[in-house]
Amino acid sequence: MVFIVTAGVNSASAQLYYYGIGVRAGKFNTGISFKGFFNPQNNTGVQLDLSYTNIASGGYTGRALFVKQVPFKLPIVQLPLDFIFGGGGHVGYFPFDPQGYYKRRHGDAVYYDKSVLSAGVDATIPIEYQVKKIAPFTLSIDMIPYFEFYNPGPEYIDFGVTVRYVVR
Image (cartoon, rainbow, N blue to C red; front, side, top):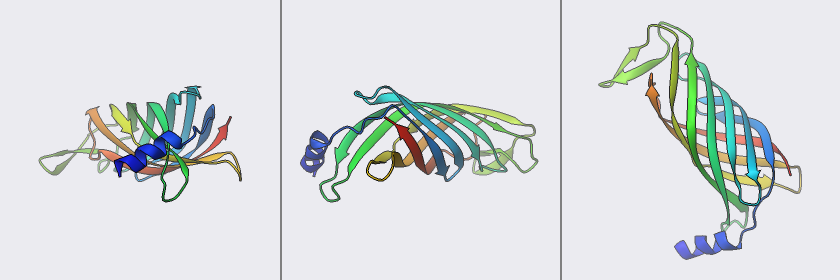
C-alpha cells in the first residue's frame, strides 16, 4: 500500500497557482479564507482565515498558518490531489454572555465572567482538488486541531470544507 501511494506522489503533477480566496464552512468556524504562495513551484505559502465561530454563544476567530502542498494521485480514483500540512496560530474574541464561552475543568463547564480574548496554536491537514476544466476553483476538506494556551475553550478540533477562486 505504501508503494502505491508513494508511486502516486512521484507521478502527480503540481497544481500551480499564486493565490486563492474563498469561503470555508466548518463545524465551528465559518468565514473567508485566503491562501497565497511565496513561490508556486515549491508550493510553500500562507493561509489566512477570518471566521465567525459558533463555539458556545459565538465569537470571532482569526487564524494564520504556514502551509506546504504536496501533490499526489490515488490510483483508484485517478484525481490529482494536493496533501497540505502546516501550522500557525489563532486569536479569538468572544463577547460576554452569562451562558457563553467556557472552559472545561474536571468535566464541568466553567463560564468566563467577561468578554474573552483567546489565543493558541494550530495545525492544518487538508486534501485539496483543483477544478481546472470547468472554472479556476479549488475544493478542500480539512481538519484543524488546535490548542488554546490563553483562555482555553471547550473544543480542540475543527473540520471543514473550503471553496476558493484561484489566480494562476
